[in-house]
Length: 208
Image (cartoon, rainbow, N blue to C red; front, top):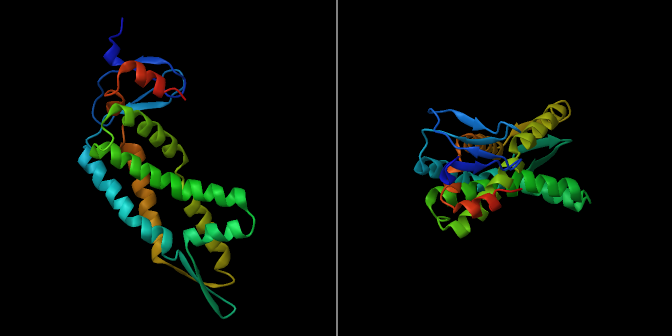
């Protein structure tokens, strides 16, 4: 029989799984649905904090600085992420604007803030810890900066033939922010935080 402290619940299919020690840089997946469960990394919470703080410091530049500069028909213009979302709202593209706002702004910011709260100990009380872990799990599935950047690059290739295009500093910041988010998704392991929550509450909270 498995010891209660060694049992984890798959967040995708609710399978009870015995937690085992892993070699460094190895990952455990659910045998039923192949959901990633936990891994063992060399990164410490302080290093995760450093990554999240770097990402948070990049947010103003990534969201407010121009991504591109355009000269079309003798008219100069520029575009940044938040202004583009406002333009979509203004043109009545509510679903597209809302999706871009959620996937390119709110989810990445939530992911950074959530991991920072966990790594720094701000959410150390288990009553706060469980909701924070669930929010991070939601944000990690919806943070899609790479999709936005790929779409922007596709648009740039189409604009090159009809306009003078220059890249802005916001695009560089957004690209670095995307790499930071991807690094956090790879390195962050929620299992040690779930282990701090009493077993019954952890099982209930990990259910989708």
